[in-house]
Image (cartoon, rainbow, N blue to C red; front, side, top):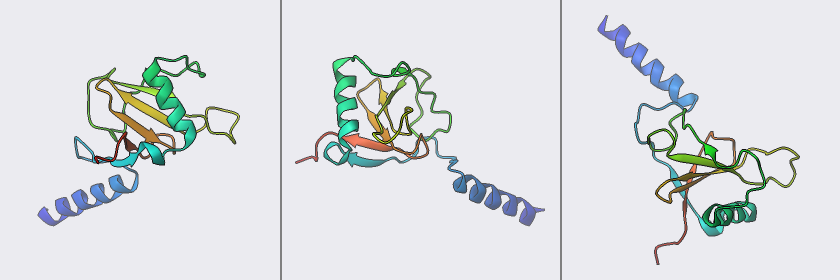
Length: 123
């Protein structure tokens, strides 16, 4: 029985990590420096800080963080904004997620992975 339970736990963790699920309540998000973002992402971040106007109707809607890939916060803490993808006619996969405490995250694969935006290199 104990071996079977261990097998199930290991299998669950392996399957979960393959699909991006985590038991970690505050996942680690790799950083990316502002200077390393595509120019469209830097433009979107500037618009967010200026309060708009935003080119897409859905910009500024609540981001639910349902997959829990960003640090857990109360619903409504995160808002999402479209980063223009030049070769796409639709909104494309790129977004910036803005937290209420000026924490910003970039995704270029429609929420599968995130990078925390660092606005300076600490020097």
